[in-house]
Image (tube, rainbow over the protein chains, first blue to last red):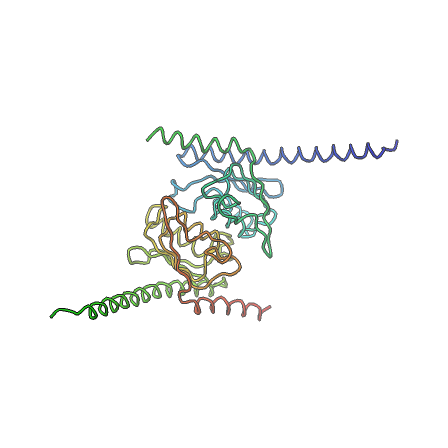
Length: 175
Length: 175
């Protein structure tokens, strides 16, 4: 039985919608893994920001903000995740990797993501005071000679934002 | 014997000029320490970039580019120097610190400098392809709520530039 042109159109639309839903589910799954990392940071009294790096469908690095614990200005979740991923891969180039982070990366982290040639970044909440994916600086998306980094924002945005909001509200209450 | 108004003006101009010369000498001294670090990188086959961090008139951290050696995208001279300085000071805040680096910092390093609240940055050569002190991005100078980072470029520029130029010329010859 041959499909009519109308049926073909419908089948194509259905396949596209299915692919969209599958991709949305995939992206949310990894963002939830990043949120889990943010909760670890929170437990340690750190601003709750978490990140994971995915390569070939597997999480190869998980990290959370450790600035206060390590007393290190560079110990943001993304930098620690990139360092772990580089060590795992044995290369400073992470072409093909995807980074999921609960908050829009700052200039340092956006720069590190571009330097490491990460292919895609998915972030949760925007960072109006220092975000470098358009909010304050525009370090990402990046398109250089040997690399290209795409950016997708607003993934599980409410969850990511409420984590940060609650953290600072609790902090103000304690003062 | 009282100075005439003309003599006072001359004395003031002389004092200012002496202060300028002293400051220029001081800045060049630390930049030469950064250049020494760049030479260490070169010896290791790395792009020759070096950095030092000065606090209270003393060098508290020295580092050089180790991206290839460490196979780490974040192992730029500035990041390694900031990490060393934070460990030495025992704080992620480096208020009052001065960072000397042979090449204009990239977005990652400029962001790290702002995050660490480094007070002043002195760089040698501009980086037209990715500098974040005005060449491509404008992450620095930075003026945030709790920090301010001033930037001074072109310190020992020719020496810093020729290091990089020679490195890439040699590399091309070997290919």
